[in-house]
Image (cartoon, rainbow, N blue to C red):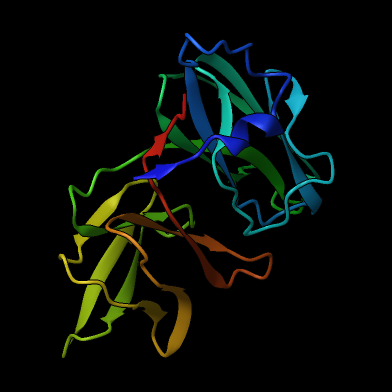
Length: 225
């Protein structure tokens, strides 16, 4: 378990005042930009406040932003795609990942330029109970994507299947070992575990339709106080 409190300073407009006697009722939001259509970077807003005015590039993910627990309005904007949003209720101490992606909207005239609708997938934290766990999530258009997991110290390569908009979990055991997530001969991402817990791999598509991946460690944050 890791102690995280510096993230609170990132969003002073969202966090309430804290006294020495009161433990803050804070939750954490992680942002993932998997929106391949459109132009430029994506903007993420919580309760109307822009998290990062410079915007987030495709494939970019963040650590946990500390915010007041309770109801939150999350909105995402990107040029050429439009905007989308969702309302979530964040519990104190909870970490939730918000993955933004786009789906093509059907048009009556096939000659019309493609139109896109922005979607948000909410991903709750998964516990690994002292072990090393891997959660695969896909926001690709394909219903299922098969990848290979090559784990250091093991003699075999394991198959894993990422179903669209669904968490697929793999138990990596209690021994730490580097994990290569491969699609055929191509390495999509490499996970180098530092601590037991859950590691997340998100599959998405580039603007050219190429399968890409990002990964992050999903620790249980602890509020210092």
